[in-house]
Length: 284
Image (cartoon, rainbow, N blue to C red; front, side):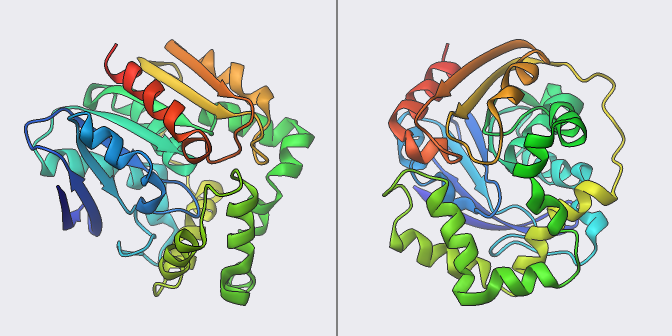
């Protein structure tokens, strides 16, 4: 059963979808850029049917959640604080966590700085933060793939370009980053409506701006001690495969699953396989 919440969490109001029994084992799903909660449409019915309790927020800056105007309010500590506040609101000592893209970066950060609040963490198509930082500095191939991160630092121009033609650049990027048919015209309608929310485009881009302009307090250790599952699509156009093994090396209980024919949206391209892999990970 679906329940929609508007929750005051960590100084912002977040739109949070909840599914399943209040007594069931909880999983939080965190979307990436330029996605929103709709990105988990292939996972929600499966894990609800498997008897889990699901929480699927629109993270700050996205869709119907609040969109703070200050870049500093999109630092990793603020983003992770939203999820800690969600756990506290529902009186959950711990939960499983799944994150894709930027949602995966938030998942890494929570696993590094607040491991006691998580049971197990699954991270899709994004490397360990230290690995990403190192490769952006020293790997020219990865830097070319990540050129847009630098372009997003400009004021107002990215918003103007990305909103043109009914967000045609976003539509093409998402469609080309996933297998044909994984993102349908109906899905794109929902995405366009989310991107068109007042302040959403700037809020979404502020995640990237904060990446370069804020300095959150680093974790005590760069090692993730929780059981961690890394999932990668072999055809991800944004992240090179050379980032995978170094990320796994930062996990003391790490597992890796690569889907060679999947793109950036592995959970959509290979939804059945990914769902069952996640299930075996959360229920070992």
